[in-house]
Image 1 (cartoon, rainbow, N blue to C red):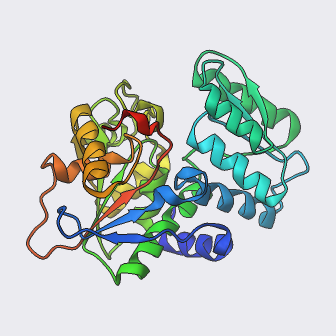
Image 2: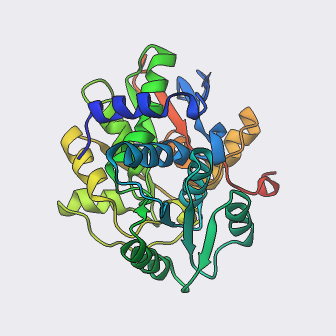
Length: 307
């Protein structure tokens, strides 16, 4: 569980090590502002959590000479490799053998030791856990760790300060680290709407079941939002703060991503378009005068697919 105090502490801890990404007023879109977090280091919000995790581990004495270990061939792994490089900490990233060559190459460029093992993420995750057990390295979970979630939540504090406040924020959900941080940061101040693709509805089904449950994963955003089970932290924060859950279809994600390009020349990945899809597909209709912030959280995508 995390609270606003944890997010406040994370904001102080990471300070100017992250970019303070801009907001864009967009009154013609159903939103009031877009939070352009895709301009963050490494192209996603995850750099915030990775920096906070490593810095907090150093403060507490958890961090050893063995450095950090993560299991992720995607945005989380790249963020951990980036944060470790910035802080002068050794990093090992475990990825499945089927991982994107471009992402593996980026991990190498950031100075991480890359271990490709297994055909599925679960196998890479197990190998990373064994490495932590053998060496005493600090494990950086992609989303279900208090420091990761609190770091991600700093973007909500930043958006609040930049806008002078808002009534509602729309945020995409995969494993739930970003959602947990945002909901904790805004508890009692703004409505948080979690948006998930129909092919990866881990939070939605957990809230319906009263506990995290395994869900099937498929669809155009599965590479980033494809957690088979929402994190315990996200589930507890969402339940405590009354997060509203919305589901969007793949065609809605595709259309929202195209809309962002056509109307605003904004390029995001399908997962980041989920928050916008809640508006463009009609899943969320703001009340008259409602101030709505849309978090555009990642841009690690191939822009050639945009017309």
